[in-house]
Amino acid sequence: MGQASGFAYQVRGDGSVLITHHGRTATVLRGGRAAEFLAEVDADPQPVMARWTGNYRRGNERTARQHPRNRG
Image 1: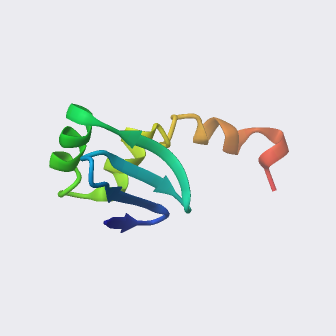
Image 2 (image 1 turned 45 degrees about the vertical axis):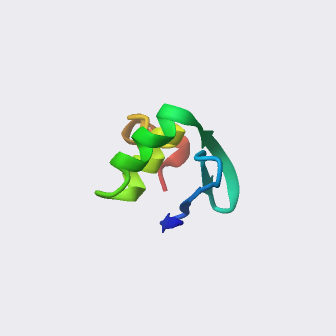
């Protein structure tokens, strides 16, 4: 089991990988995708799990910060 900043993953007995974010299931990887994820996750788990779950920066943070509603 690996954990990093809200993300955690668990390898199940059937070879599938369960990825959770703050305790809630984000995705389940099976077969070749699970093996590919496990080969990649050794380097730095946080951005790898964020990318595999689709929960990563979408590029609009700067635009949102400049919106009049978000200016303090």
